[in-house]
Length: 111
Length: 116
Image 1 (cartoon, chains in turn brown, red):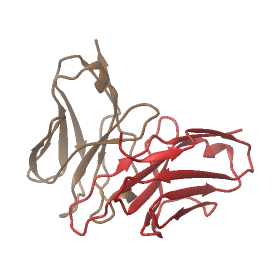
Image 2 (spheres, rainbow over the protein chains, first blue to last red; image 1 turned 90 degrees about the vertical axis):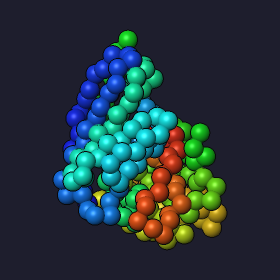
Image 3 (cartoon, rainbow over the protein chains, first blue to last red; image 1 turned 30 degrees about the horizontal axis):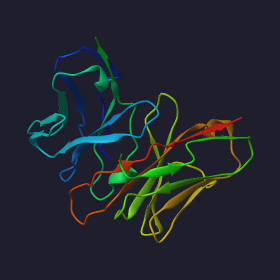
Image 4 (spheres, helix red, strand yellow; image 1 turned 180 degrees about the vertical axis):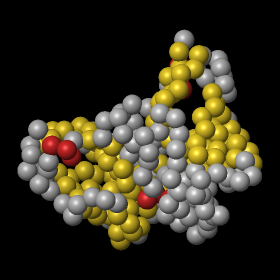
């Protein structure tokens, strides 16, 4: 299983772009990178998933360099409601839900 | 709303008792996973069920057991409750695709279990 490392916490002001980087040095060829968001006392919510280069949806962008040993979740113009814990996952192919989440990155958005 | 519902939302039990938590999967999903989330920690994988069979287990003792029913709903049973079992228990459902592309898991709101 690819081990992931991400910052424990980050602070950002409202309206700024936030970039959270995750390292996954032993990612396997077929592994995808997935990010989840979790608010207190709620279940995690899927944000975005990617394999290489760049993926964008209505919520975020995911940047993955050519070596795929890291990835960066980019949240454009954050608001107070983006205050949450963000988890980077690299689940093994076919074993998606068996992954144990790390401690994630706690993002605090400041007014 | 993810379409995954868990019951009850909160529960208080005494050490040594047994508890059953329930999860109703999103329509069409054939896989359910259970997670334990202690305060301040990320979710820890307990086990996964695929088409009514256990399909992977995390580092949890046998007193944690589960079931998946033909309609793909699921139960998590915990026997001989310990104080450290106090946590948020999350259920996640998904449709396992036959490809390298991992499928999105949809989580319920969780059951907050307190063992006293």
